[in-house]
Length: 224
Image 1 (cartoon, rainbow, N blue to C red):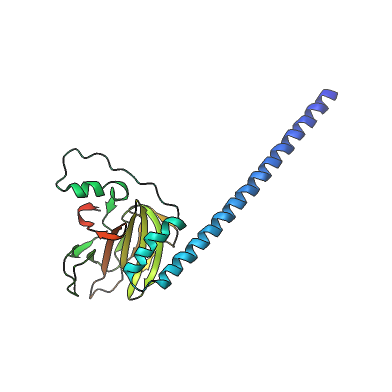
Image 2 (cartoon, one colour):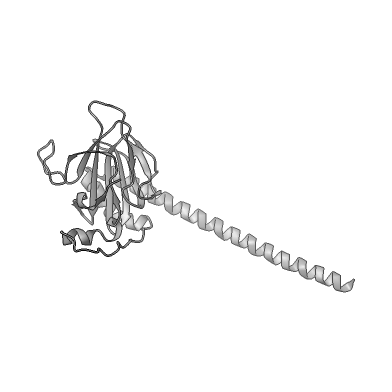
């Protein structure tokens, strides 16, 4: 009987220690969650301030290129598998590494204006424009963190995704946007939809920025 009592006391002491350890672990997790929430709130506030302070879309993007790495965790770059045959354009082969290894066409539609082609203002386009069906789904062209969403100056809804590897993906012209600022999205994940007006049909403008300049996304895009 005495041995049984001793064993019971030992068990109770062990359970008490486990309870204390679990309580401490839960407290540490709560602190970590609170700290992450504060950091996320500070990052969101700073990104919103950048949007208010920027006069033009290009200025907004360059400011985000500078500030986003300090505010949000960057995804690790993904390396593309080695090509079996020599590519026709070596510069594109280099660009296909990292964040651009898997770049998806953001919307099903007709290409209205390609990169470098003259647009309505007779300036060479620094992106590509698609004519889409009313209500067409728009997807994330690559994995990344959403660092800006919403209207900007004269633009309809703008979505900017930090894909890592110094790459930002910019989409404008969406009618609805699903992800919130700071959320992560996966390549091919729906991020919004085009407007429902038939005439004129909705247009989606898509840019790829690497560091502080735009690059031609057309040779990099994989068909949906």
